Image (cartoon, rainbow, N blue to C red):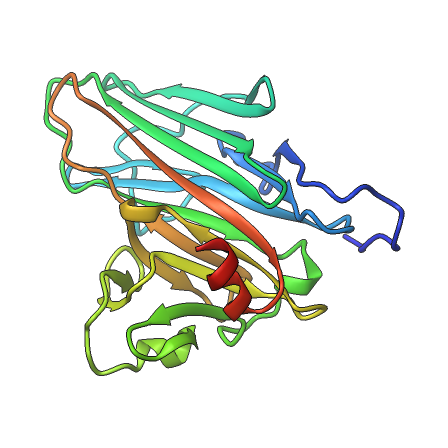
Length: 256
């Protein structure tokens, strides 16, 4: 995608149903624009995967390393509800997953995921991957971890690779794929623009399990977890995408 010239578009966040891999029609992809003038969209894989102690409940694509509990599900379209888009997906076991995304303010997008255990078995060890795919947004899509930042106790904001080298596990949030060492003291990962002093950040607040970057893939993750769900129980987690024009210091002061 090509960035628009100044004045070509209004400055505002837009949230739209989207596509990433058309051969996986059951994906839940949302396209989200930054609030500054741009034609570039971020792609939110929402979620990319849901993993439990029983096995993989949902995966938005095929990966032989993660066999699924059920056959590939049918497509479930996004439904516009007011300013939000949302979906509901029922699994053969009786488990129901719901997702909702809405422009929350001039600089934030609210995210909501729910799981309802309508099965006859407890759901335990529930972890998710929620991928913010940056390839279409040129200012964020460099194949590097040097533009991904997390906050480390006593050190402040550090590039992701340097943060993972810290010796002391003094944080509350892990760095790694649905696990790793608890190094970060803020449940948030930020990607800095290569075009201007601005950034996009992702968090699931207290439900954030881990923060992830990938030097070989233009994405970043704040990956959440759910509590164990007994049959009949339901739980909802909430998070945000945050856009900020300024550096990390002003982001921390103004937004956190």
